Structure formats: structure tokens, C-alpha cells
Amino acid sequence: MEYLILVAGLALIIIGAMMLTDGSVALAKKFRVPEFIIGLTVMAVGTSLPEFVVSFFAALGGSGDMAIGNIVGSNIFNILAILGICAIFMPIDFTRTNVRRDIPACIAATVALLVVTALNGDITRIEGLILLAGYVVMITLTIRADRKAMTKEPEAEALTVKMSYLKVTVWIVAGLAGLIFGGRMCVNSATEIARQLGVSEAVIAITLVAGGTSLPELASSLVSILRGSPSLALGNVLGSNIANILLILGVCGTVTPLTMGDVGMNDIYMTLAAAMVVLISALIIGRDKLTRIEGVMFLVCYAAYVYTLI
Image (cartoon, rainbow, N blue to C red):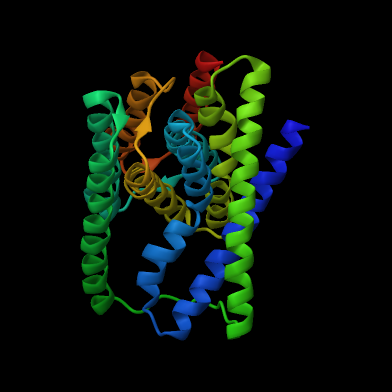
């Protein structure tokens, strides 16, 4: 029964995130917000809403290790599992922007997490504020850079989300309700599953919960691959990982201090190693391309990591 509740909670979160994102995009369009800003903010954060909801409710319930473990596990899953699967379907080309800005930004965010957790084993309110400030700075710089690029390149295809104000309101309210109730169901069921299996909440968060909350990233990345735009899958994963650390842990740590608990530094190191592997692949191994062989290697590494945890 607890597994069914967990699945139902994840389903509510994913559906709620989709509804809230669509409603927010439609509302932003009505207020004539530029599309590239919508993409960098609403769309980027939208796929990270499941991680945010689970981590936020876990933090409020005093389960800091589940909050941190969910983010750590999601970031590892995003790179090794999602990029691995996508690369098997279609090799992913690295752009100059990926190599010079996006991948280093992902590594920098992971290093920031490593530093704050290594200092005292938790994330204090001050450290949460620092992470949150880092996200604001990073988004501001990205918007400025992309705004300059928009003046030199033709505008991309317009977003087609069109809704009445009533439908926008219903979508946003229903999406928030799905996220809230789904988040509570996930945290409660994951805690009970951990007790039944005799493992820590951190392990459940890093594996089962993290994989579930990363389903939106997996779905959107696979859609990008099937549409012949593998670079969008890479941007989605990198943007999600940055938001997971700087925005989500920043907000959660600001609201209430987070204790690592059973989340070990080895898990943080694994998160950094995954981000570094992407850079190594872009510069050395794949020569500006994530190949199918590397995709298989990514999946093998993820399976080995989960095996060592269990």
C-alpha cells in the first residue's frame, strides 16, 4: 500500500507541475513577458517542481537528509541515467555555450553544495541564503547574455500555450493543490517504506524518490530527442541540476536548517563526479559529442552507484 501511495503521490506531483507550468506560461504570455525569459525561469523551474515539493515538505518535517538526498539523487539520476538514455537514442552535441557556460555553471553549483556540506555537515539558513543568491545572480547573468544573443538571431518559434484567465486560474490552483498533496503523500510513504525495509530515509530519497521526481526531466528530454533536438535535453538536465542545488536547497535551507543525516560526503562527491564527467566528455572523450557508447557507460555507472547504496 505504501508503494501505491508513493506512486500516486508522484503522479499528483507530475500532473500538478505540468498544470502549474502551463498556467504560468500562459499567464506570462498574457503579460507579454519575453519568451526566452519564460524559458529560463518558468519552464526551467517547472521540471524541478517535484524535487522542490518533496524536499520542501521533508525539510518542514525535520527530515533534512531526505531533502538533501532527494536533490543529490536527482542530480546524479539526471546526468547518468537521463543523459545516458538520451545519448543511446541519439548522440548529443555540445555547443560552445554548453562548454563555456552551462557545464561550468553546473559544476560550480555542485562545488558550492560540497563546500557548504563539508563545513559543518548541514545547510544553515545563512548558507541557504548564499545558495539562493547564487541562483539569482546566475539567472540574471544568463538572461542578460541571452538577451544580447536574441538581438543577433531570429526569434524562436513562439510558445503556443493559450488559455483564458479562468482556465489559467484553474490550472495554477489545481497544479498547486496537486503539488502540495502529492508532496505530502510522497514524504510520508517514503518514510514508511524506509522503516519497513530497514534502510535510511536518505537511501530511499536518493534512489526511489529521486528517480520519481526526475520523471518530468526524463519525459521532456526524451521528447526533445524524438523531435531531433538533443541539445535541448542537455540544457534541460543542466538547468535542472543548477536549480535543484541553488534554488531548491537554497529555499529549503533558508526556511529551516537542513541536516545531512545519513547522506554521506561520498554521495556529494558522486554528484560532483557526474558533473565533471560531462565536461570531460565534451572536452576530451567524445570530442564535443556525448556518444552512444558513453551513454551506455553512464547507465552502467548509475546502476553500480545504486547497487553500492542498496
